[in-house]
Length: 230
Image (cartoon, rainbow, N blue to C red):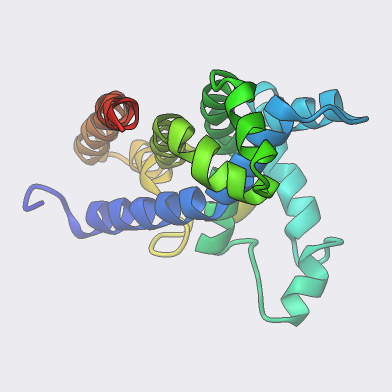
């Protein structure tokens, strides 16, 4: 890291922190929503599916603005949370929230495809033996979809690392507080002589993105082999 300046290292560390928390917090919700969309039939299912994938369609700036309206200090959710000492707007926690929402569709899609590949008869067999739905999911479904869960989590982490539009709209670009890797690249390109620093961060971004894709494929295959072998 000796070739990176203090501001670049700070942006990288913050991006890793934001992406990790964004992935960890959204993963349980991603598994639940993916399972609901893959296995359940209920009124409003298509609406839920549309809402999940909406961040992929909307301009990221629009998503960030909606987050600001909702979770800002004057927002319907942000106001009550602020009274409890939980603030998202213009904080790194808000960056994690924005990144998690933007990465959520990729996570859900990867996990949902894994669930749909599982034969429902295997789950039904577990239920006929008296196991509860939760136990069937934990002992039958989850081990079989583990490659998809891991792949979805890694892809979500990579997406969170590269998130820019929604994040900068919701939490601004404050060095040391909300300036993530993409925001730092943007900031360096706005000042004379910042091209070198921006280039270094771009290289890191490419390495992280490619590494995440390769790791997702590798881990997914290894886990799939272990599951098949067991």
